[in-house]
Amino acid sequence: MKRYSSLIYVLILSFILTSCFDKRKPNYQYFPDMYEPVSYETYGEYDIFPNAQQALEPVKESISRGWLPYDYEDNAEGYDLAKADLTNPLPYTEENYNKGREMYDIYCATCHGGNGNGKGYLVEREKILGVPSYDDIGRAITEGSVYHVMYHGINTMGSYASQMSNEELWQVTHYVMTLKDLLEDKEQKEFVEDVENPVVR
Ligand code: HEC
Image 1 (cartoon, helix red, strand yellow):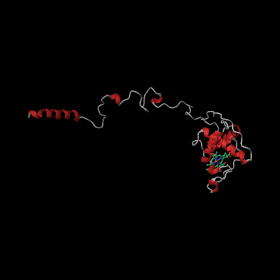
Image 2 (tube, helix red, strand yellow):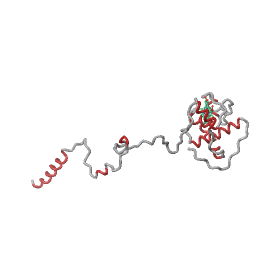
Image 3 (spheres, helix red, strand yellow):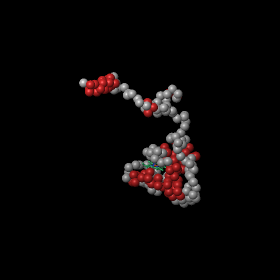
Image 4 (tube, protein in one colour):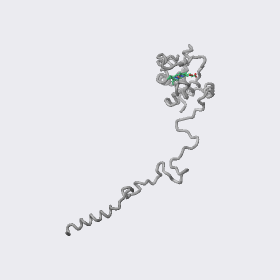
């Protein structure tokens, strides 16, 4: 009997230690700092913050990094203002022109045609109607209006603001205005020699 007594003690002890254990409650925490961080929990509630909310809201009227608000609204008035006042902040360098052409061929040529006459692939296959030529006198597009319609879209043409950076939108604008000149039998403007682009986010 003596041989087994220590074993029995161990069994009784382990029964006492585990019998009251409630599986639905968190277990005993050894080194609680490992589980409960000293810093604030993301999205936790702490009285020290406004509304007891750890994730602070951005300061009113702050804007995201790398993004600038565009002041011209998506309506006829905004269009007219952009058309009259807005000019291309990028110099007419060969690089800007080439980047603009690349983007144009990807995003615009399917409807507007490689030379901007409004007879792209989708128009020829009658998938979309009413695509104007860039030398359409009634529209008399300007740098500002080209940027504006790419930014907001116009009627059946969608917006490109989420697909291209602001710099790219302005590069495409240079290219579109060049196509307009060529359609009007004008000479292409001379390139400006290697100037750095200003930051246009
Ligand atoms: C899905 C076909 C389609 C694509 C792609 C497209 N457009 Fe258009 N675009 C149109 C149509 C249709 C109109 C005429 C909209 C209207 O005024 O009713 C138009 C109009 C325009 C105008 C004239 C707007 C004015 O001031 O009257 C410009 C400039 C223009 N697009 C530039 C672009 C550029 C730049 C791209 C590429 C970033 C592009 N479009 C991509 C269909 C397209």
